[in-house]
Length: 265
Image (cartoon, rainbow, N blue to C red):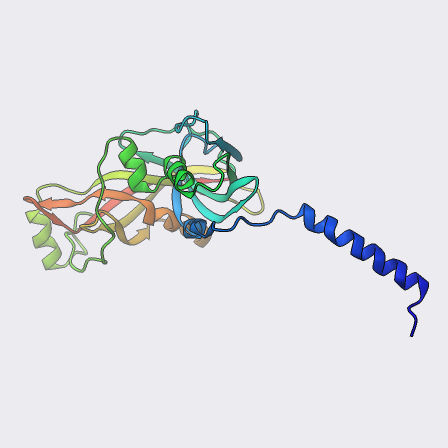
């Protein structure tokens, strides 16, 4: 059975177009699976948190210019012939005892591109750790050692926020404390209003327990904020780091009440 002439021409046209379309598609680089580990991680974009596009070349200095450190979540990380590209969602402004970023507007999303590294995965990961460190790496850059691995949620904790509701055991532990928890790294969260109808900046109180690993557990946002606003605050709490409370020289879980600057944009 002969194919109609019009159909033959159509088939030929499709056949000619397919290679051209394929040429325009950037193929992933083989061996770039190491980037998958970054997806879903919460980190800190140093110096460039107020930029929606950050381009880094291998020849650039490790420390980028700028003054805005933003907490971010890595949404995707891919490598192609053009380089490595990470898509970041911004969560808020990152701060530490020795770091006081100056941020204006922080865009909802940032694209971080690293070019000129070839297939050198070690050089890529090394630069990512400089530009996009974990809270521990961020503190280390400012000379603050924090090397405690994540532990489990503490059971009994000294009560230092509301003795009226504390148990007898929590009160006894509170009396024995010689040093309260000290905040080392924190994030002031931003909520993106989908209607763009509200702009707000104020303080919110967060109650939680600082474990001996320096992380927050059982966090509760005080006040009458709406559920989406509470969720935005709770989302950044796992990033916070503390020097644990002490009973003599022994690290002790303890309740803490802390304030955050909360923004709605």
